[in-house]
Amino acid sequence: MTIAMSTADWFSLFLHFLSLSLLGVGGAISTAPDMHRFLVDQQGWLTDPQFNASIAIAQAAPGPNVLFIALLGWNVGLNAGGGFTTALLGMAMTMVGIMIPSTTLTYMAGRWGHENRELRAVRAFKQGLTPIVIALLVATGWILATGSTYQVRNWPIWLIAIMSTIIVWRTKLHLLWLLGAGAAIGWMGWV
Amino acid sequence: MISSPEAPVEAPSEPRPRPNSLSDLFFSFTFLALQGFGGVLAIVQRELVEKKKWLTREEFVEDWAVAQIMPGPNVVNLSLMLGDRYFGLRGAMTAVAGMLALPLLVVLCLALVYAQYSENVHVAGALRGMAAVAAGLITATGLKLASALKKNPLGIPLCIGFGVASFVGIALLRWPLAYVLLGIGGLSCVMTYRKMGKRGT
Image 1 (tube, rainbow over the protein chains, first blue to last red):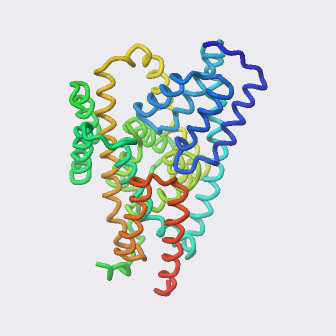
Image 2: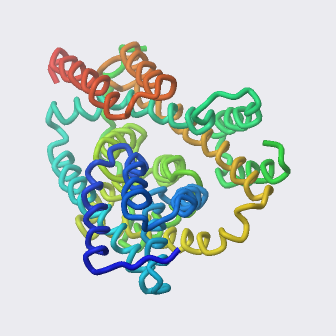
Image 3: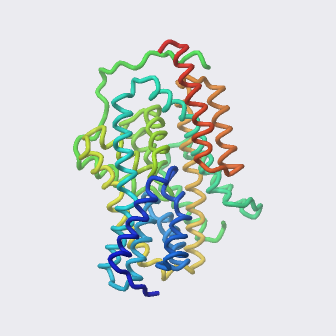
């Protein structure tokens, strides 16, 4: 697909991601539905397959999953028809937009919290959240392994997830071996 | 089990391992990010806590709580806070750049070749297999960090109670994260605050 992007359009792309930044509590992925609404439904700057592929690739690749936002901008830029120049421009608009507000706030809050780490309120805040944060990690693993619906035919996935949980918990085996084994099992078509 | 939270804090005389330069910080985080398939947290915990020992388990889980509750990508927030602690603003920017720069290039390269292989059943299967392992990595990270709860002022039974409630809310009932953090998390923070008061600390 080819689209025409005016200067105002680039600016509104930047502004939209800027405005979503502070809403992304629990990771940028929680704002993905709104990005879809804006980029695909409202503006028509991306197709559905482009949107989904951006998320899938960023999840499969190493590194923070937030990079899917860079791919969204990259694909908008490619659609704008200027090759790598507009692709890089699009990527800069989405990434800088999504990063600036949240990093600024985290920087200031983190600094304040560290300077006041002896305050009872700060300690209570951090320690009180500890059990919840730990539970969230276990819950995230659970959701990734089971998907949005429970289907018994997915048992090989659960088995692999349980095995890797136990191995990582109880041994010091390097994580890349496990990921490699998972990839090999998948390649053979066993999951 | 709950009688030990008063254990004396280890003497601060022992010099703590820490990154020895900005480039050490940058490459450490790049190295972490490039190993982090399906999320970087598991590898961050293993490298920074278990291998490099820049942080204890307790410090890690506390910083992670802050990184999690602030808006924005969690591991980026965590890198930012750690970088700042070692080298100030320059450190914060270096750590974030380390976490994002090279992985960004990798993602772009993958996007460029993806179109050719997206239909391949082997590739799709391999991705599913890796995703299943990644799910286990995250669960195991949570289980390992659970030992940090031994020193929690809430005591083990309350920690387990809040933890199980959060797990049920998120994993089984699929509540929005904000409800769990504000509701269960808020209650837990208030009770921690009161328990700390009773102990006179």
